[in-house]
Amino acid sequence: MQFELTEEHLMIRQAARDFAQIELKPGVIERDEHQKFPAEQVKMLGELGFMGMMVSPDYGGSGMDAISYSLVMEELSKVDASASVVVSVNNSLVCYGLEKYGTEEQKQKYLVPLAKGEVIGAFCLSEPEAGSDATSQHTTAVDMGDYYLLNGTKNWITNGNSASTYIVMAQTDHSKKHRGINALIVEKGMEGFAVGNKENKLGIRGSDTHSLMFTDVKVPKANRIGEDGFGFKFAMATLEGGRIGIASQALGIAAGAYELSVQYAKERKAFGKTLADLQAIQFKLADMATEIEAARLLCHRAAWLKDQGLPYAQAASMAKLFASETAMRTTVEAVQIHGGYGFVKEYHVERLMRDAKITQIYEGTSEIQRIVISREVLK
Ligand code: CAA
Image (cartoon, rainbow, N blue to C red; front, side, top):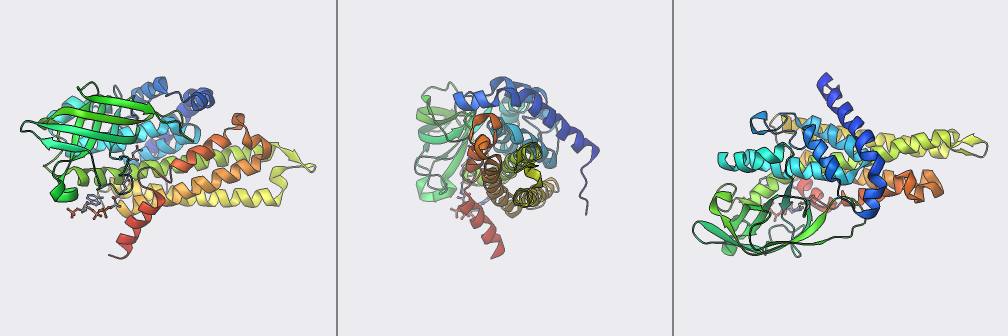
């Protein structure tokens, strides 16, 4: 068993850590307050090779492993989870699926610019009446011969406005239930495709979350990913990898709040001592450190299984379940340790607490993760 990171992993982690401190931290409070998308920073992340991390260099990617991806997600999320979710969706839900299941033509046309970070992608599964129950797709893609006629609405789509390439799940044959769902590549600008209002969110406010409307959009047959009816399996398979990304995001949010708490506890004086001298605070920090380390091990294990080509659905769900609950508990405690300062924006922990909540919701709620885990347990 090997617990040590390689030299390459350490270098990648350091690059992400430096980027987060130098490029993300200075404007993060303002972007959160004004719901400003980190466009410049995302462009730089593309130049660093972090938008198509695991994609082969043949398709414009960086050819890194999933452990590196987890490390980068953790470091970026310590500072700015709004930026890191853009990285996660582009890498896991868009690039990964296109590389694994796309045709050569789709890879050349769509994957290459996505992996280079020249454009951003979005993954469109959720609908007003299909969140956790992802098989209940109301969006339709009627087979018209050489194209599909796409109609419907998607909700809560990350990168909803900033994306150029959208992977949209839609029902072609209701009688086949989830086996009648297709995954279609839709381009911004296709006639009949409109982006709805931006959601005014509790957390990850810098990311742009929108509803999308499709009215008689003609999507060429060549833009279908996989065989007819493969869309639901495509969505489930890509979400498996996505859960490693969001688990690592949750880990980063927790670790960011913890690091700020340790620093604050060493500086802040109360009752003639530093907070770090008080056992009540020491115990909180010890619990945080232990849970974060456990979450990190789960994230790295899931990433390692993926890198080995072994089944990792259960491991990814365990990592996401535990890391997201850790993010919630840790950030609440971080605000408590900071007292009144924790309740104001300048100290960052209140934002991390708000950002933590979404990690228990998107890419499958904690309840969905428990379903995936228990199915494996009871197999
Ligand atoms: N890989 C490939 N195929 C899979 C799979 C996987 N990991 N998991 C399931 N499937 C296949 C099954 O084999 C089955 O196929 P057949 O019927 O042909 O044999 C089919 O999919 C249906 O599987 P289930 O019977 O398990 O389906 P279910 O209806 O019971 O649902 C579920 C399972 C786990 C609850 C699933 O619906 C689910 O994960 N829901 C949550 C969806 C979700 O995560 N949404 C998040 C939206 S995306 C997002 O948040 C992105 C963002 O913006 C950040």
